[in-house]
Length: 145
Length: 341
Image 1: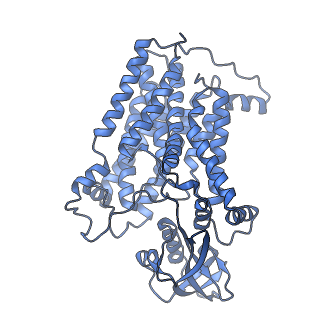
Image 2 (image 1 turned 60 degrees about the horizontal axis):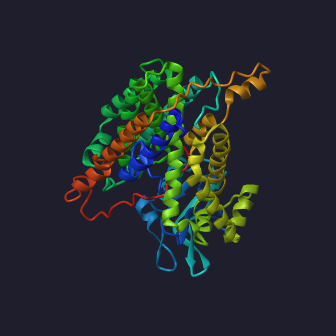
Image 3 (image 1 turned 120 degrees about the vertical axis):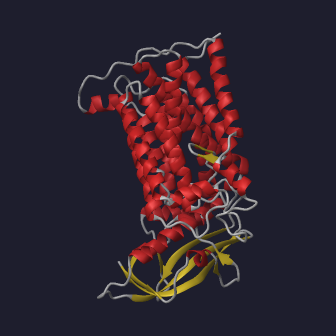
């Protein structure tokens, strides 16, 4: 009978041990089952973006010199109501990054800012079709970088 | 077999890579603590003491100091690297879990490097038990780290396989819309648009992701297996960056370092003689030794299943959580992970 070499024996045991321990604890450093994207099939997507006066949609990071008419709260943004009466739910950490960018780039004294709309662009899966919606968040002014 | 693909002289480099990636990981933890404001409510799964720890600066600074000492001792090598490595692992474990309580979600990119350190230390402990010399010890450490790193991908693949949601006709399409920059007009943006307009491409990509991740055990089958599957795993990360703007830099660096025979590559580039093939210091295990090794592994798994974790402690407190208002719904712990490093 072929005997297992020590490195392979160790590798098999560490591989099995890590996998088994991770299933037991789910998430406790250094063990994790890495369950990202293993949930039920998603039925919507949403991104917090900018819509300019011409209707062009761009990422928030493309703009600087921000001024918004309302205070932008993370919780409010996560629960933005869409024209269909349902909420648009952009990914939390992306919303945080976007809000950080807006706060870190306030209106500069001589900036030529244009009126823009902050929206949550939402894609809803309805049957076999994807419905696109713009869910308004706030009126702002910002300068395209 | 799980032989090294790095040849002589490759392993001290791997130890340094592991130490550097741990340092990057520590920097990332500090950045999360001090630059990202905490959520208004702490996650329900986090025990109160971790949240309390987050509110105090000195324990975080002390833990960072301990982690730094541990990482430095690991990088230095020698026989004491085992104890320094254990110190780094424990300090990082508390820091990463406290950080998860601070930011309100698990940042799993930190776990890959922790897994590699765990595997490295398993190899060193096993080497000690077999009276291995320094060189053989680091070969075992390298094999252990490779195994734990491969297990992280196998776990991810297994989770996707069991849930099955990723294989839905529109899942990948929705993920791309959700994560890809809306104004990307580059070639990658056009390819992403192709995935959005042709959902069957997304289904094919989802299938390939699961095959690559679930097949990560092939990484342990030998030098060729490690190079081929390492390349596939790196391709998976590049694809995730291209389509979803999510990059696991630390895991990718570890894969690049672990997957290729760098000593030979550098020798060829510098036109020096190739390093000798690793000597066969890979003795077989007796049935008794193999049973002992499997027994210790099973014990560790059992311990992980019964030991208190932040989640179980948080659940125990959930009757009257001191840090979560009663009306707050539980945070979804399966939320998608953070993007850049």
